[in-house]
Image (cartoon, rainbow, N blue to C red; front, side, top):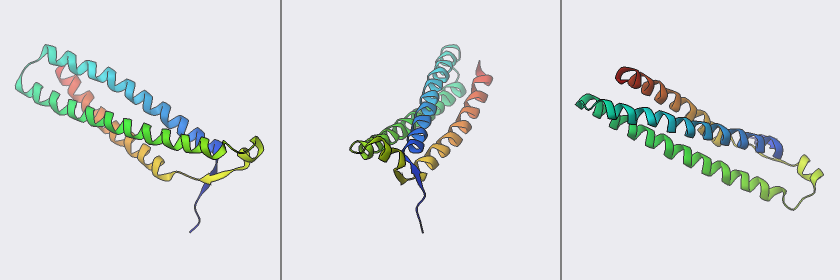
Length: 129
C-alpha cells in the first residue's frame, strides 16, 4: 500500500489553516464562557447549577483537546521545518513528504464534536438567559 505524499508547502498550509481554526475555536470558547458566568450570576437554581457544571466540564475538555491538537500540529510544523532546513529552495519546493491523515482526522473529529457541544450550549444559554 503506497502512502500519500504532499509537498512541504501543502503540508505547511494544512498546519497553518488548522492552527488558525483552532485559535478561532479557543477565542469562541472564551466568549461562550462569559455567557455561562452571566447565567451563574443571574440564576442559582439547582437545575441551572447542574447544567452550568456540566457545560463547564465539557468546555474544559474542549480546551484540553484544542491545546493537544495545537501542540501536535506545531510539532509537525517544526518537523517540516527541520526537513527543509538543510536543502536549497528548489529542493524544498520539490520535496514530497507523507501526508498527515491522522492530524486531519483529529481536526475533523474535533470540529464535529465542538459543533455538537456548541449547539447544546446555545440551547442551554437560550433557556437560562
